[in-house]
Length: 345
Image 1: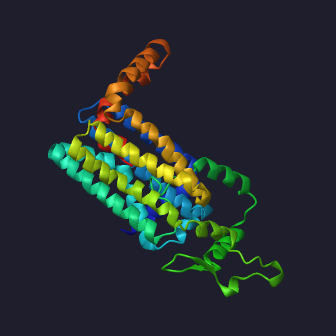
Image 2: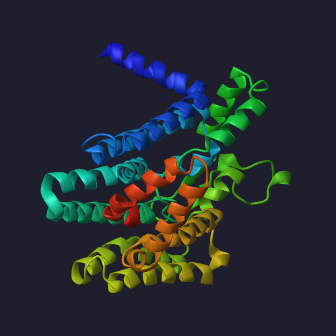
Image 3: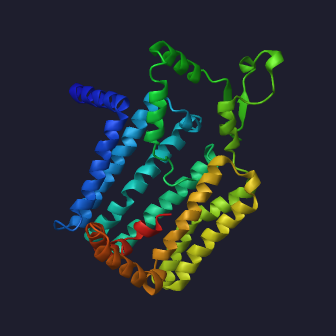
């Protein structure tokens, strides 16, 4: 056991000091899952398992790098309760593995078992998101709840400041970050500055410290709660519509599309109340509306024939494109039959 702990600590130290090399290894692991697909029996399960494990490895390495660098972009996470943070970790892990869980459930229990597992996952995700929204400083629920670190940006920062920062300065900065000049009220979540944290009177502006101002902004206004509640409940309502009307019905399709559009509309009506994080996440949700082009029944009626003709054209006219277009065309039916590929959020 001591040997295993020592190996784990050595690995964490290596990851923290070599994030670029780690990133290359993670990318290779993801590409392996694409090459496995279609080449061995039960390739869907195996390739998805490899892809899931690679995502989990990226997530674990991100946490190591984040702790080592004391990254400022995750300072809001540190202000939250341990329960909320652990719940975010659990939801992120679930989002990375939900496709593999669905495929495995379908093989083991058939279609009935598959849809039961999907319903349980979506109920847990909705309950977890509601809890995080009510009991943390998060003003909007991202997908996944803990985003991947921007390794390239972190690498540039490390190269720019690496030679100038001494170990003594690192220790001093760590001690300073641990000695917070504010505290958070448990019920309201409001950030209050301590008396001893006040600067000299001639420099006082009666505002929170810059780092904690972002945390204070994450208290979601009541006007935006309806939009976020609607977005969180959409997967459950859509699942109910699918069970009533069928997964190829236009009714279930329009229910999901209407809820997404109305949630975005509510946010845009009160854009002046939104934080920077909310605006970024809203932009991502707008882009995700493109998924409706490949969701049933729109895909079968409009997108499928056009997409297949485009892939055939690329395979015939563009050199080496056949290596990508062929497997892509072969895998589309598998993606279409997997719920979490298209309806995860």
